[in-house]
Length: 89
View 1: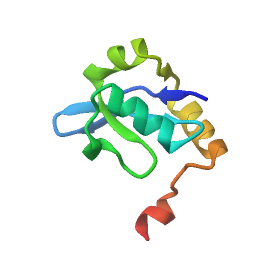
View 2: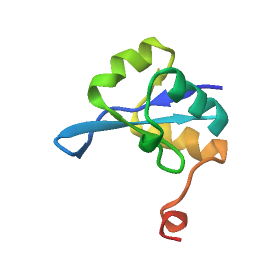
View 3: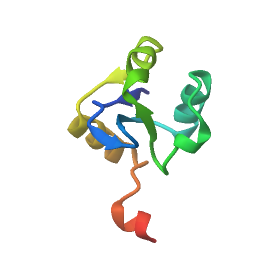
């Protein structure tokens, strides 16, 4: 069971963003996010959007830093991935 974070490569609102996911459960992800002060509004179906400056703090708190491909691979394997088709409804 791990909380994973990828590299902040996603631009939005004048900053770069990373993704924070769990490879085992949304409960684990929400608990980690809450403990580390991430606002609920940053949750997007299967991940939290995390600003670049939060990465060192989240990694120090136990998030495993992985590349984007590894993060997606492990999210899919967990069964928690929400696909683009599912997002569109």
